[in-house]
Image 1 (cartoon, one colour):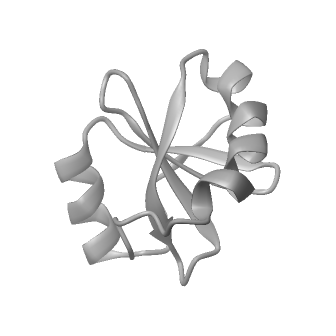
Image 2 (cartoon, one colour):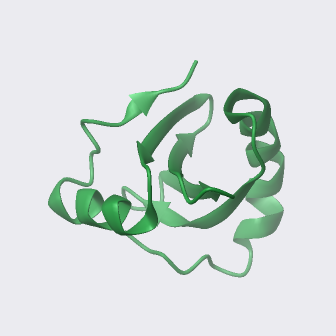
Image 3 (spheres, helix red, strand yellow):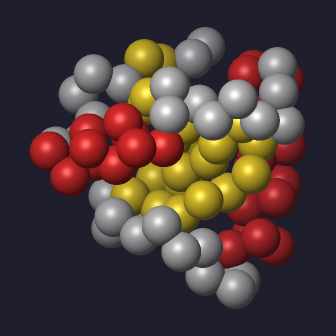
Length: 84
C-alpha cells in the first residue's frame, strides 16, 4: 500500500478517474495505490475511499483512517463494495 501519489500518477490516472466520477456521482482525487500498484486509491469530498482498476470500481471505506486499517489488515479488500 502506498499513500503518496507518485508524480506521474496524475497524468495516467486522470482519464481513468474521469470514467469513475459518473459512477460515484462525486469528484475523486487520487490518494495512492494498493495491491502492488494495481489498484488506484481515490477519495471523494466526503472522505469516502474508493479503489479502482480498469473497469472495476469499489467503495473501500467511509473514511481514510478506516481504509488504512482495512488495507493493513487485508490488502485484497474482501469487503469492498463493487460499484456498477
